[in-house]
Length: 143
Ligand SMILES: [Zn+2]
Image (cartoon, rainbow, N blue to C red; front, side, top):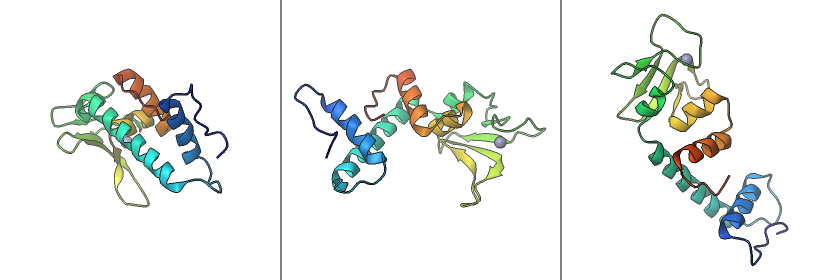
């Protein structure tokens, strides 16, 4: 596989970073599927670690949205309206906006802390993970 040679001086982290770039690129003939999957799995573990570092969604979202005790507030993704149209479910650990539904699933717009941050800042998932990882001191090798 061109470009994925692990040099003697290169660290494992660098090799992983290279591999993940390959894994997320267009399908290439000769790519080892199992290897890519293992590394994506590793990336997923890192995202889980970041989520643990971020902690409760209520506390996280409270930095950006004024929430009442039950977790309701004004939606930051839509123009202000008279009713609280945004809520955080503390127990389940997700936020939801009642303005929009996903046409594919029929569910309200919502997600975890990373998805909140991504949407609020207009970032890609990778960018959001990279910024939050830096803020919360989690080493994400894969991006
Ligand atoms: Zn909304």
